[in-house]
Image (cartoon, rainbow, N blue to C red; front, side):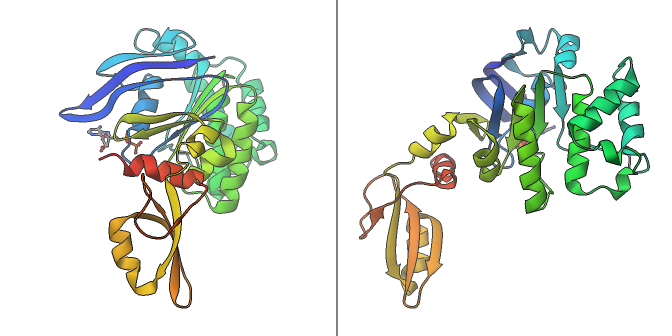
Length: 286
Ligand code: ADP
């Protein structure tokens, strides 16, 4: 099932949060990557029919988000960024309550199935207050999966998780993406590397890149350099170039940095990392 966005813009009073955003996302995991303030939540909230765009179109499975809210809510599971859980309830009680709000029939069956899908079936009777960050996020996904939607949108789900939890959660997302269209927003390049095939980079409300992870990496070929410079030159070097890595050695520093053209210091071209390719996109725009 396809998410299609064409020329979508959103103004908050005079502030432009999205500017003529266009992309499409099909089955598998598409990462929406961008720094804080890029417009990711605004875009996801529009897709989830919670926010009206100022202009342009967006549709899910062919349903326009403005005209077919009810249909969209039936095919879409959404995990917003600030997702409130009721700590006093057990996981089962919470999902049962969410299923009630969503008007789901055969609640018991749906709740048990959602708990199983996120691997929390053994914790159904535990109070949410005792859950780890990763378990809470999985429970958030469980509520999004209650109506077995073919499309899942998750807003920055790895924020607040420790590195091990984050890793497990990414693997879990990969499993979900095997049979669904998943749009995952994140500001972490690692999330993209470990979970996504398709990546859209959003920066200051505009799409800066749309393609595969490999293509993003390749886009920085010939633009990343490494050099050995005297220790005392490090600060001046930083002011001149966008330094991506810096390691101090005894009398020198090893630096990796971005430059669109051959730098005027002795340096070697380096194979770009995904992080560097992303930084280059962000760096080259105001
Ligand atoms: P992200 O999710 O990438 O961090 P957001 O979509 O939350 O980005 O925000 C994009 C921009 O829009 C930011 O500059 C933010 O301050 C602004 N913004 C978000 N929500 C509102 C709002 N309700 N009113 C005014 N400005 C907003």
